[in-house]
Length: 121
Image (cartoon, rainbow, N blue to C red; front, side, top):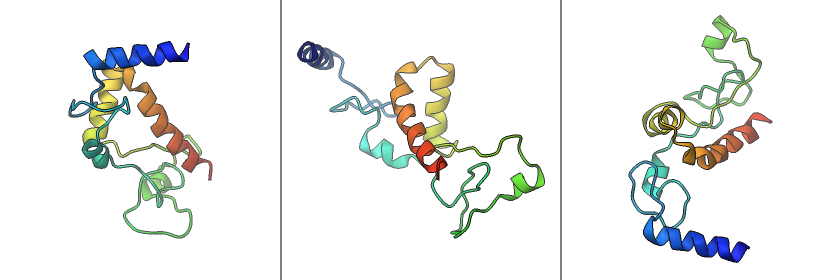
């Protein structure tokens, strides 16, 4: 069964090759993004606010809370996002949410898994 599935995918990809979700260049595999577009993504990593996950512009060695969360504490204990909500990332998210681009779900699930791993620390 796997053989037929692989054969079918190769057949389909020969007529409808996978394309980058941003620039629409042809991809060798259905990874979602080409190299140049992937390099434009701004993933959030440490250091960031312990509560809301907003990235800090400076290095900190302890868990800190941003001023916005100190002034007006959110109703949640801790939250994380995989990327900054601007530029290419914002365009992809808006297309996923409002343009029924559900084919992006595998890509976003990988992003959310990465953010979740950082969340558990």
